[in-house]
Amino acid sequence: VQLQASGGGLVQPGGSLRLSCAASGSIFSINVMGWYRQAPGKERELVAHIVSGGTTNYGDSVKGRFTASRDNAKNTVYLQMNSLKPEDTAVYYCGAEVVSRSSSGSYYYTSKYWGQGTQVTVSS
Image (cartoon, rainbow, N blue to C red; front, side, top):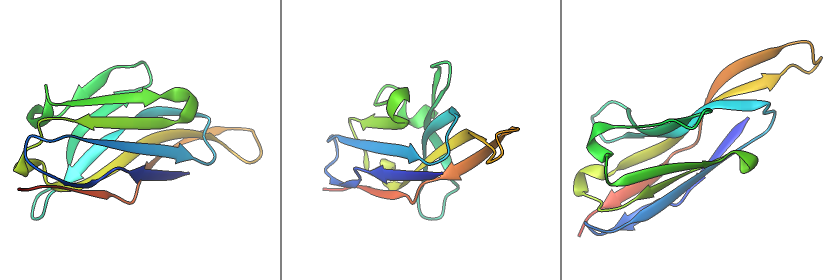
C-alpha cells in the first residue's frame, strides 16, 4: 500500500491550502485515514483523521480552521486548511490504517502506513 500526498507549499498568514492524499495498492478497506504533522523539534501530532463510519477528529489547535474530508471510492482524504498561522508550519504526513486481503485470500490483516510528507510553510 502506498500513500501519495500533495498540495503543500508556502502561504502567507491568513491564507489557505488544500492537501490531498491518495491510497493505492492492496486495499480491502480503510479503517482510519488522516493527517498528522511534525514541526522541527516537536513530536508528531494529530491534525485530523476520519474513521470509516465518518467520524472526524481534529487536533485542538486546528479546530474551526481545518476541515478534513474523505472520498471512499477514491481512497483519498483531503485537508482544507484556512486561516493559516505561522505555527501551522510543519511537515504534514498522511496516515492510514488499511485492511488488506492475503494473497491466498484466506485471511485479512490490518497495517498502518505513512505517506512521504509534504511541507507546509506559513510565512509573510
